[in-house]
Length: 108
Image 1 (cartoon, rainbow, N blue to C red):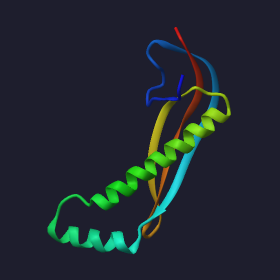
Image 2 (tube, rainbow, N blue to C red):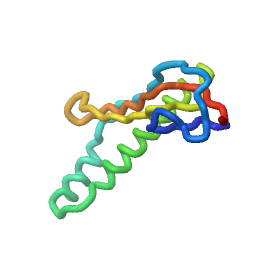
Image 3 (cartoon, helix red, strand yellow):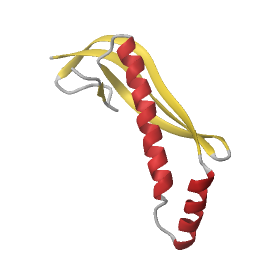
Image 4 (cartoon, rainbow, N blue to C red):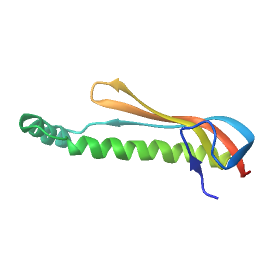
């Protein structure tokens, strides 16, 4: 079974047989001058700033990958109560943090 990530506290059709505890994965990303220039032009004409959307999506995936790696390392096959948060570290950079409870689940 691959790693199952859910935002709920339970997984329908499964039972939690072991709780390992908190796992997390994070990354801090800074904007770059090229992206800022393109985004600046886009802010003048309006619309989605796709450069930042792409950067944040990649950051979320990296944080989730790190969370999954930590959960696998300790023997879990699922993470329940998954949450993802974002915070500003300094001007021009943000942290993406994914966290949840690592568990072992079985059908049941």
